[in-house]
Image: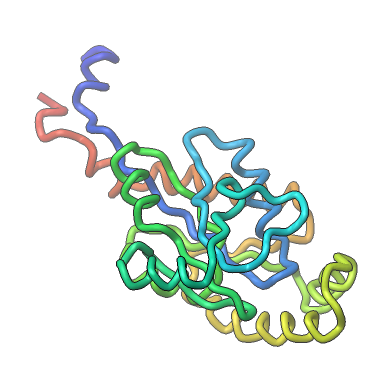
Length: 212
């Protein structure tokens, strides 16, 4: 059987959803940004949020920044695959992003909190879940302090939230320890490549006459 015949016998793949969660300061956003530069056929799922845009962020690229009323209407209309309130602000993943990925074969990577991950787990059991954190809580605290973007009260609030988020770690498929960005990035890209080669995902695409 020639190469062209093999290709004809394999159906177009459905996009895989990769969920990346972890406490604030764990480095998951930087990790995701670097993975997007290295991995082909991988796109960032742009979430909606009611929080204010930070310096350097672009509407429609980092987030879709919406008002609280807009967000409520989207919830009412069933437009989210998941949504949650995090640090007093609302975040949600548009359902249209998932449908687009499924139909186009593009893999999506989501940077979402544990609340949203729970909702995705209930609806999309084929998603791949990764939890990112440093090797110690002390390192996490130091990173939040060094960012110099939050006051002491906000840092303590984020650390309290981190303790609660880490309680969900057993529900994740992979744990990525992010002390070294290069090593963590190697781990994440390895997870992505392994998921793409999973038996069930590949065999689901092979037509029944593949071996004829």
